[in-house]
Image (cartoon, rainbow, N blue to C red; front, side, top):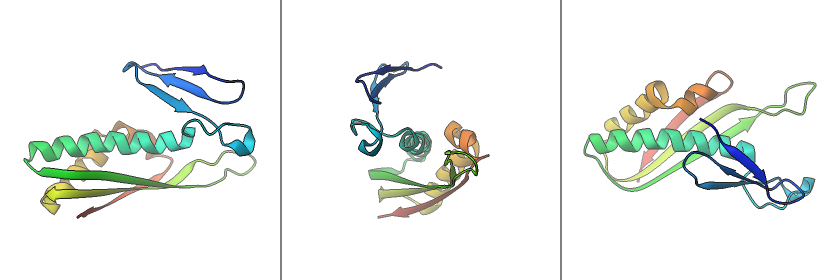
Length: 139
């Protein structure tokens, strides 16, 4: 897998493109000279985790013949500064699933567990450096 980032302006705005060909904008905040024209890199890490596990959960629920009327995932991360550096990696991440529809809570719980423990590559990438938990609700 490979991605490409191209600088758009004379500050920090970048446009990324992967094998899908879909563009993703990345930028820094105005407080350090960015133009707020894209997501922050650390936001994208949380989005990647949420997206990866969502694909798994939706696929499993579809195979289980569950009816999803609405789907949302909220990923929250707590960061911690590494002493002697400016690095602040995520140390705790919670993935909260909100679904609406005819969904058996036990099937949803199983789908989430399968994703987190067996399928989601983003979880595998982050789990050694951050405690990843999950919660869910059916509305």
